[in-house]
Length: 71
Image (cartoon, rainbow, N blue to C red; front, side):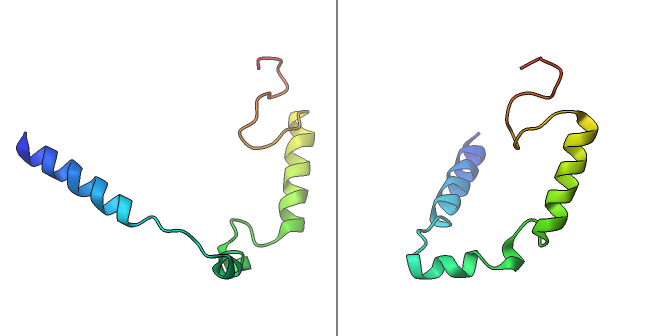
């Protein structure tokens, strides 16, 4: 039991030290195209439009509603 408590404490300490503030001058490096989930915005938009057309529903990620009226 003691080992588990020490392990949890160590994980919490290590995860807290991994957080840092990003300076305004460093934010440009985080906005590079290599850091994006999708590199081609037009292709992503076309795929989303196709998916919305097939599902007969529109909405954002994580939003309520799926076209079935169950939100």
